[in-house]
Image 1: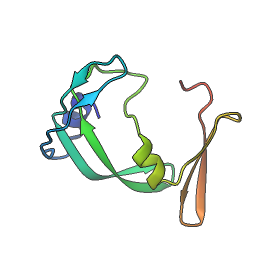
Image 2 (image 1 turned 90 degrees about the vertical axis):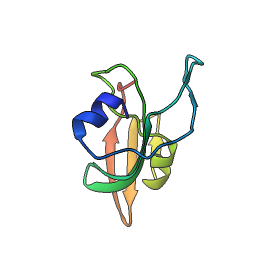
Image 3 (image 1 turned 60 degrees about the vertical axis):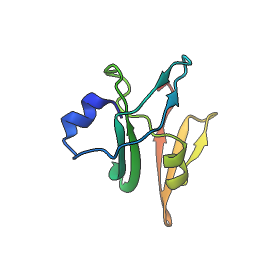
Image 4 (image 1 turned 90 degrees about the horizontal axis):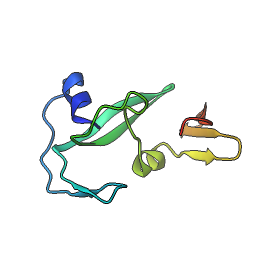
Length: 102
């Protein structure tokens, strides 16, 4: 989660971390902290999500990136050919169109 968004949401203090992250450009960054088990609503479902707080520039097209741990928690199925993302909770599921969003 970008630091500017974290401050805007006013969701408390992050837990400290000694983590370092290598970005796609191979640069190494050190997060400001981690917010654990923040409840995030996606469609009709609510999931507990851990966010790493990073000092990165604001991007109006991409506010949050939900990574592999979230996809595992949401029991996600991604159909690249049809451009669909299916999230599941219990016996329910929600389908989202993801074509053209990259």
